[in-house]
Length: 257
Image 1 (cartoon, one colour):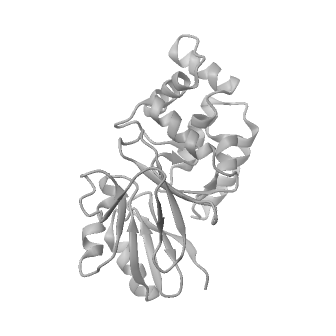
Image 2 (cartoon, rainbow, N blue to C red):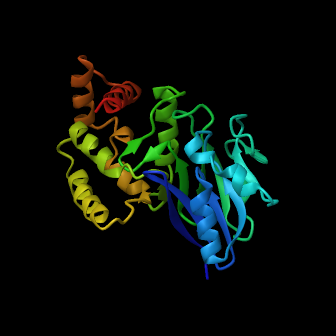
């Protein structure tokens, strides 16, 4: 079989993305080893590699268990807080996934954390973006600045519209509720909310999303749109014009929404 990408659920709302064929699997951000081990056993798959986007424990917590007794690469950022990485990556570097022949290009995307990276394949239209970009949202700025997040999201928005966005949390409905408050006249957002609600009612993941859908519905990449500028300015109590200030205002608003 050709490769496919399946979500393994972890904790309350995490997805561990798993690239697999009939014999091997590669997992992205395994915060918990248990669902990965269960899936490998059930599907009779051999783990070939682990991909890490950033150091938070819900993304790396299962790594040590998964690499025990296995001689496999662990790809990750230049950050000592990802202690088990065997290959640390910088912006623009590429890796070829063992057994799959998929080449991924590394994008440094600080904002959520200072060392966050993402992985993109133009050939396969896939982006593993960790917690930088979500469906209709973006990650909290724990270590980075609004300017860094704006630049990082800009890197993603320069990718092809057809790129499938494999973010790592099921935050879509709550993100859409905020997005509608930030841009209430956005019809594409209303349509997406209806589809997402229907998907969640039958327990279907709302991700991957696409770059095209994010361009149309995500307030954090729409900071030059008049509707977003207006609500951000109202929230800040002053006129805002540059997109970084707009993003800062709506991210701060989202933190307490």
